[in-house]
Image (cartoon, rainbow, N blue to C red; front, side, top):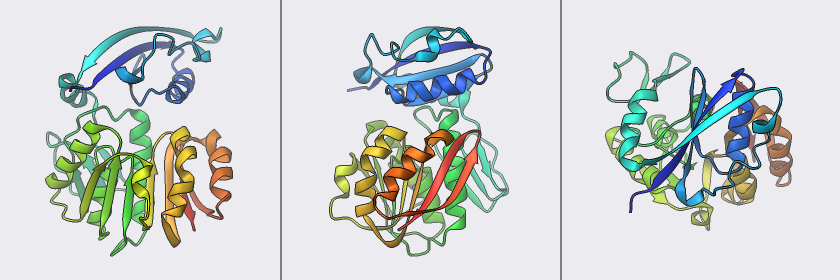
Length: 277
């Protein structure tokens, strides 16, 4: 059965910092992807997660400081590829890594990741993916067992293999992401990535040298204990998908299990944290 998304297109005046706050609040109530534009942002939520009262707890909509209006529409799965092509720009990280679609020009960089996206990145995903790639650039991954949790299109799993990691597990609860990650791994000629559809329950009795979790704050807080249990001693945990102001909340939860924060990367108020077990 096709998955159906609800899209809210918000016009925001003034755009900043209201759009940033709006995205954060929408993320907390279940919106999972965002595409910013010159007038504001379009936010997407799966129809099965949507309720008629979904916006009642979005406090910024009632703020006197900003003028925010919106339109709602239903988007079926067949629309996503065209949405991607309109909104997806290639990413380049530290003049070493490119993430692009097949219709983009081939860059002359050391690592070239080609993906055929099926659902929206969103600006936030771009920022967090960029920072996670920076963290992975700094790690020695040869022969390391890696988990990409909430893998989406599979970018971070693919890059891990390019840097010599094996074996690699990539997990996502979303069927589109699961199917897309399989296709993208094959497209990049990866041989050591296994993709699974599911959630943190799949980690039982599994261990990894590096765990990557680029998901929203609430899911991370719920699943951090299992990540730590699935990490070898001296293993690395990379977390992103949240804002700078969320660091104390995330760090408090991770610290319960004895991990040490060793590096923080910030990009446009989004952050990616590196922990060592």
